[in-house]
Length: 158
Length: 209
Image 1 (tube, rainbow over the protein chains, first blue to last red):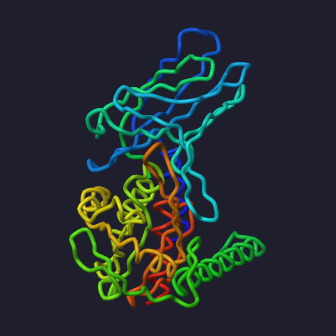
Image 2: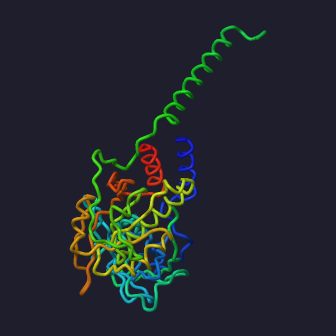
Image 3: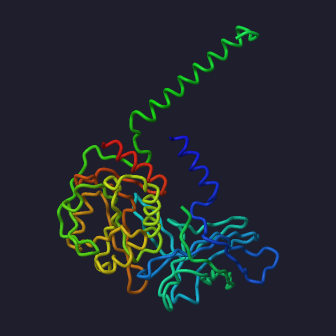
């Protein structure tokens, strides 16, 4: 039985390389300024939440191919009046969610925003929180530039 | 076996004997004795859930009487929680699906007890929790009684300001299993996966048979 479970787990892992893989492809449109080494947002998705929810979370990976640190100081979306960068930390089994003033991606590094860790907290929906489709988002950088991208609404793969 | 050298015959016989022994040992280990859970911690002394004033999303009393007779997975969360709470409810929905073959009397119920009774009315819980699975229930415990309940589970919560006029709730993210005698029987520490939770639930239920 254990072997079967292991095999099934391996199979599942093979099907979903990332435990919380995005429900669909995402498109990133990095700022046009730095053509050669533009930071790339991949695998973005926004959690599908009950209609009663007042907020949801966005997840993504961001890669910094440049030679300078990339500093994220905020985020925004035309569909939400407030978007904040938050991090969930586990301290002695307690989940603590805190606003992050900034998130730095070192040159050559990739930082993952994922469940139980960093996330974009999407609050105060202009209308209602979309239960499907794509949500336009932007990461705001310390140098004043922005990275626009869209993230599909969905549930993570189990 | 004509034509087969005696040594080859012996070698084959030995290999077959070893294979049979290994298979026998594996069967004995896996079919005979139930396995202990891999991540969950089973309490040596289960703790009875106290009777505090609490109601579920449908207004039904929630307490030892309601818990008796079946297994219940308990999660402490709140609806103004964009990350860990929906993620955990999603994991529990996945685990529930993986346990679909269990007979109804063994299928654990799932409840989220709100650690934010000020904002999470029963009505609000009714709009939120069943989204993840129609049988999942939200439970509202008055603020004055919440600490007494969480203490028995070994859970904690704390309010922390967030933004200008809002707050967030720090809370224990472990899952708790209440046994059919209405006692806290096991703790599932983070991180949680649907497969891990389902497998440990199966093992604990099997151990208690």
